[in-house]
Image (cartoon, rainbow, N blue to C red; front, side, top):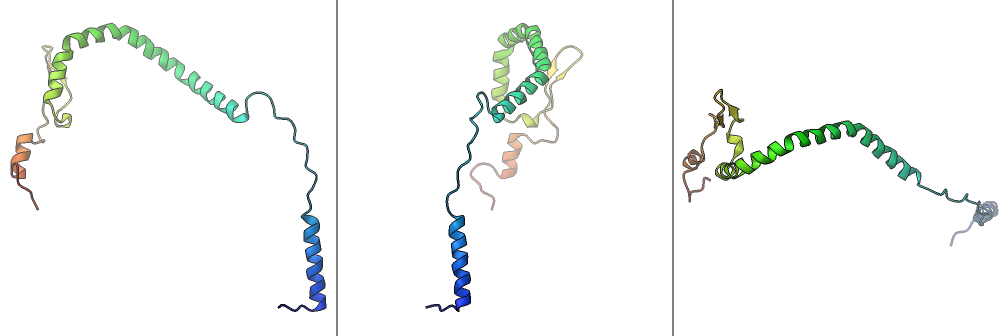
Length: 135
């Protein structure tokens, strides 16, 4: 049991009374009614997207014009060359082994293999062939 001197007991009693007085409920303030319409966050997002739309509008217009210009020619190209391109894509296992396509003066298009990249057969020979494991 804790025994306090009369002076300390009075201080503790006054401190307790002050804490109880401060802990009583206070009258709530009236909150103003919520504004009708969009919140600040919603309005900010609307302004943000309007700005993006204004910035991108000229570029999107140009892209649409390009699609209208090149669209029919590209469709015709894909109809004629699509199967051949699919055959090439199935043959090539790793496109990083090849240079960019090159158009020759006679109109031929060639895709050269990079000289410093070994072929898949050379990779297997260096690894020791199938069935072996390097440790």
